[in-house]
Image (tube, rainbow, N blue to C red; front, top):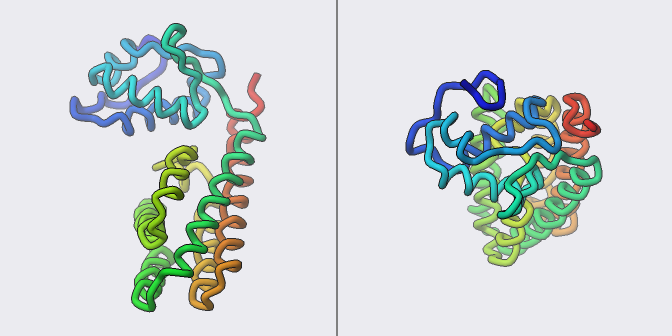
Length: 226
């Protein structure tokens, strides 16, 4: 029986990664099953999910960096909760980094690179569902990061990890629309070789996504819950 008194999905496989454990914990927080201040016991989570404590600890450390949890070695992990300013600041920072990446791509991308990105953008638009859309979007983002070829900016992304991962487009109703519009604006700027335009497109897109996430979290009670 779950020590948190909630129904669990089927147990994770033994080889489950820390990312899968982290995704499970995020779902519990976003659904309201884990509330601000609630303590997470590593041994209980490991038993519930059928994994060792190693991926659980790694997941907790990652979620501490993302702001979902407060983790101290001597006190354990507690649900931190998110404030409205946390979300706004997070997406502003992500926008700054992606804006700089976009500038670098404008400066370095060849005509063939632009064609490849354009093909991915078109594939995103044709995606029949949010799962395919998310997968193609991730491919496009990886290509942008690769073309920018900036270890410093790549490292900056690691310290501002996405608040949500696999569930983003399911949880945020306007997420796909915002992403499509932002990518289209970036591609127009890229084809025009406008670094300022590409930078603005990325910052605007991330700001809009932040507003959408804040609205979704407020509606679900994640933001503003006492």
